[in-house]
Amino acid sequence: MKYRLSLILVLAVSASGAASKSLAIRAVNGDAAAVQSLRAMGQPGVDALLAIRNETDAKRLGPVIDTVCRQRDCTWSGLYWYTDLEEAKRVARRTNRPILSLRLLGNLDEELSCANSRYFRTLLYPNREIRAFLRANYVLHWQSVRAAPTITIDFGGGRRMRRTITGNSIHYVLDAEGAVLDGIPGLYAPQAFLSLLREDAVLHRALMRFPTPEERFRKLAAYHGNVLYMARWTWRSPFDRSNEYENTRAQRMAAWTSGNMAPTKSGGGEATLLDRVSFDSRAFGLVSDLRHLLKDVVVGKKTIDDNARALIFAKRAASSDPAVRSRKSSEKAIENLERTLAADTKINEQRLHADIRRQLASGEAGGGVDAFNDWVYAEIFRAPNDDPWMGLVSDASFTGIIGEGLFVAQ
Image (tube, rainbow, N blue to C red):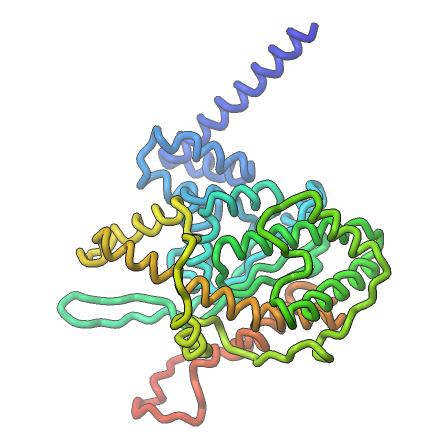
């Protein structure tokens, strides 16, 4: 009897696998209905496409898998993203997982989304450790805040440069009801980002032990208050002793949140007050800080893993400029990235993330993720949603151009 049941199970799994493969092949061959069916399957639909990666043309597979994932460069990350927050919340409730909700300028499945989101999908999501942890522990969701501003420079002679300018992105960690547990602003080095993901996953599990939103909210405020208090000396979370994820660490977090600890001196009281800044270190707000930090950054352990490096090489190999395509220039670009990643991480953690923790510790962050995100873009990134020019235009400046070069379609 056991043998028959096992055989039936094996046959069922094989049939399911064959059906998924058939769908994947049809999708790559242009069957729009098959693409939609794979999208509806969620992560298994992405996995079905990845399974035929060596059997199909990469140029045809890329656009299809990006459509199913809803993420550009998904061939390298293999991560499925929800774009409907309510759907993500339903999955989070069913799986008892937190939601990692990315808010960005532009769309994650477009080439010219904002700069930070492009670094996320190049340096972070393809990282083997990060993608494995995200798949096992989070429900992924993204939402566009507004279009990413783009600029085209015509050098003449057929040479043009097209880039995005300004903007920033933030990853929110949410519970299944959409409450904000943490916000990770801007770009971090892969290991620092992974450490925060691990800690927030533990925090989520610890908070879910409390039956009411009110209790969870109080414990969350206490947690961020104490992180700020400890950071006055170490700039590290009291639970972030290493990048290793261990049971003892989860037990420390659970023991802490289970106690009757009240918020310590934080939230703008005795916690260090940090300057408000605009955007990330690659925009106009922190250029001098970045230059100062880079003088002292020494590249040691490589943080960009082999999969992300291969993606960087592939992207640069598509350039029409032979100097950019060269292996030597790509290696130099990666070396520079390693240095700026270290500086970005320090600025974002010590300034932007500290401000976000301070707001969460204050007990004034109960309005939901949309209201919190409006506050972040207005107060942390200095790009309020009600400013059509995103802080790039001053009504007191004169350029010598008719109408200051500003045009609004009628």
